[in-house]
Length: 446
Figure 1 (cartoon, rainbow, N blue to C red):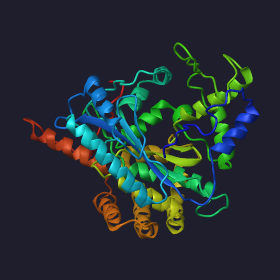
Figure 2 (tube, rainbow, N blue to C red):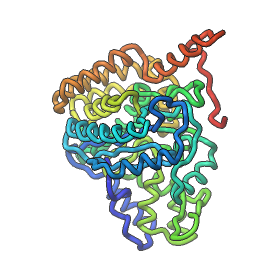
Figure 3 (cartoon, rainbow, N blue to C red):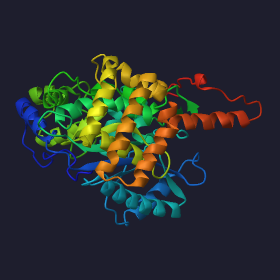
C-alpha cells in the first residue's frame, strides 16, 4: 500500500537516536495491530516495445512516455524504478473488490498513454531479453548500486530488470488466533514459499534458462541475508524485527551535497554506538527501514514481496485475491496454517528465503510434490473464502482457472515461458527442442 511517508512517522525528525530508542521506535511503528480492515497491492511492470519486446526502449522514449503519464489523474501513486520499470501502488482499500477496481482503472489509463508511444506493460518476474541498465541516476540508487555490487551483479538485475506483485495485508490482531499478528507473521514466512512456487514466472536471463523457475528469487538469495533476508522466527515478531533492523548493515549515510557515503559492514546498532561518521537520527532510521528487502517487510502492515510479476493484463488479480483470502478470512487462514505447517521442517529454522524450503520453491515451483499439495489446499480454501470477502464471479473464476491450469497440474507460469522457448528452438533449422531436464543454471555474471 502506498504511503506518502515512506518509513513510518520518523521522516522529519532530525534528533540523534540511541540504541534503546531505535528498538522502541521500530517496535512501535512496524506492527500496528487491530482487526484486518485494509488491503493493498504494489505492481511492478517491465516496459517494453509494444510490437517487438526484445528490442530495447531508449531512455529518451521512456522519459517522454513518463512525462505524459505525469499528466494523467490516477487514484494510485505511480513511481519509476531504477531500471525504468513502472510501479503502481494502491492506497489502502477497504475491500478486495475496491482494490481491484481502483487499480484496474488506473492500469487502463496507464496502458492507454503508453500505447500511444508504442509501449506496453509486461508482467514477468525478470526481463528475459535485456541486460540491466539504470534509467534513474539519483543519490539513492547510486549508493544502492555501490552497496549491492559488493555481493556481485545480482543487485543490478534486481534494481533494473525485475518486477513483482507485492500484496499488503494488515499486521493482524494483538490477540492470538488465526488473525493474530504472531500467527500472520509466521504464516507469511511459510506460505510465502508456496506463493513463490505457484506464481514463479522468471525462468530466463538473456533468453536462456537459468535452472530456476523464479530467477527473481535467486537474485534475492545472491544479494545476501543482511540486505534481503528475513529475521529468525525465534521470538515475538516485534522483538525479532527490532533486533534484525539494528543488526542489518547500513546501506548509506546521506549527505546534503555530493555522493552519499556507503559504509562497509556497519550495522545500525554499531552506528548508534560509534556515532560515526555522524550520529544517526530518527530520519536515518526511517531511511534504513526502506533499504531492507526481506520477503516479508513489516511497515505497520505486512508487505509480502515474494511473488513474481504475472502474465496478462489482469494476472496480478489472482495472487492478490488468493493472498487476501488466506490472510483475512479466518477459516481460510486456519486451513492455510495447517497446510503449510508440515513444510516448516524443511526450512530447518533458517530465515527465508535462505533456507531449503524457499530455494526448492524458487527452483522447482509446483513440480515439488509437497509444495503442490499445500498449494492445492490453499487454493481450495481461497476459492471457498472469496465470496465471503465479497469477490465477484469474475475474480473467483480467474482464481479457479489458475488453479486448473497450473496448481492442479504441478505447473506455474514460468513453465509456459520455457515451453514457448523450447517450441521456438524446435522450429529453428536443426533445432531439437528439449525437456524440462535441460534447464541449466546460467550464471547471472554473464
